[in-house]
Length: 174
Image (cartoon, rainbow, N blue to C red; front, side):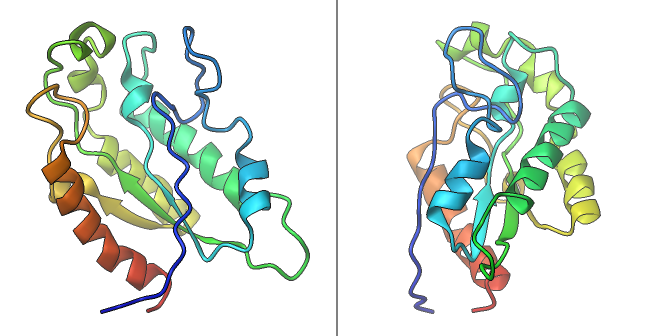
């Protein structure tokens, strides 16, 4: 199925849901979010895939706490200052695949992250049900990298992208 869409990518290495990075400023996902929604409006859909960095060793977060950070992100998207008569965008939340045992350069940065992120998809699903957002668990189609245990490798990006294409089409009623 061919669908004509415009994709605005807004990724940032190390971005968290609501926490600051003590070493790299500007990684708190709430910072400037309302303005990014406003400047890019109208938007039909906002896809949110955050959470992995909430479990870096500098934070002692649980899956529940990360999900509460997600709830703050969703509320900010819904209440962004858009122009009158512009639609509030639909939201698709993508839970990242669980962190494996971090390796190499990621080992110290994500120390104990595999245990801390346990149950993240289930907690995200609860928040999405409460806030009436579409939800997709990336862990159902791919795991995290076998190379570093945290990120997605090229092939995993492809698999996830193909799965998300169908979810996006559903979300925007294509």
